[in-house]
Image (tube, rainbow, N blue to C red; front, side, top):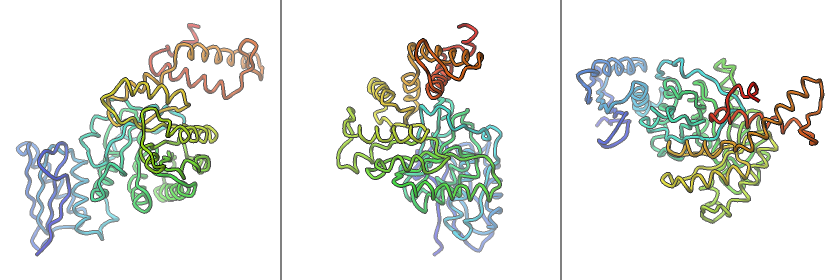
Amino acid sequence: MTKMFQAGPPGKSIKSDCQVFYTPGPEPLKIKIESKVQVLFSGAIRELAEKAFSGFGIETGSVQIKDFGALPFVMMAQIETVIKRAHPELDKLSLLPELKEHAKYETTPGRFRRSRLYLPGNQPKLFLNAGIHKPDCIILDLEDSVPPAEKDAARYMVRNALRTLDFFGSERLVRINQGELGMLDLEAIIPHNVHVVLLPKAETAEQVIAMDNKVQEILKREGISRPVYYMPILESALGVLNAREIAMASKFNVALAMGLEDYTADIGTERTLEGTESFFARSMLINAARAAGIQPIATVFSDVNNEAALRSNVRETKALGFDGMGCIHPRQIKPIHEEFAPSEAEITKAKRIILAADDAEARGLGVVAVGSKMIDPPIVKRAERTIRMAVDTDMLSENWKEQA
């Protein structure tokens, strides 16, 4: 009996996705469409399916597509999944949607990463409006949030999302898997304008170097000159103890992130709101990141319904020295941005430092002084960052110098 292959989420309560069933066979390809918008779009769905199967050289068998409002990039990912599950020898071929103009913007190493919104890579319904909430970063996750049986489908889904969706200027991040699965993830995503790759459970510098070597190999092969940056995540005792080496393992590292759920499990305790059990780890990460000249990024706050506790956590996180943190729901973004915003006192101090630096430069002086205190370049740089954040959060006018 011929085996039937399928892709797409199970059940009937499905949104913005589809189910694809494919049974190889000798008869000419037969395609059946079921859709909530069948009258309007069944012809377009059929045309897409015919083109997809033809692109993989498949002209026989039986196909059934149950559409639940899937956009073309989603349907293309599920069709590619079912084809490759049935014909793994076709793994080198791809079914790529058009690379949209709004998906071509780049990033910079020092940009704000106050908020990073995690989105499971196998749930496209969560992708579609993610950029509207204006997180600094959007993380399309291929690791923990994706069941093992759906890793392949999520890989194609994330790749297609990178080519298609408008994230409204948010930095485009992907968290890959560990080991060989991670190398497959890199092959899938690197050519499609991913800005930053998150390396989970980083424990040694060698892991970062191996990832870097693979990324550079892909970029060279594809003729891509733009850089791809990295954010290793520390999630174990060994990773924390090797924090400095990991932070300095690649010139493309832009941040070092903390994953406290796995870390606390690794050291044999439970995560608490007070965070005393992770104070050492967080401090190690901050110092390692600062020593390497990259950003320290805190873990997610998991209680999405407790805004007061979230704000308290962000204030503590900022006071320790972190530049940002993860979030698992859009409602966490605004409180995180507000709590990471500089205070009036910080803004006033930063303005004085920058004006003093401008005055010193205009007079040809190599030393910056604020009152009787000498100010070195790192302090000026920090003041500039404070001002940029104040402007970004509408606490300060862009032409504030003219009003000074």
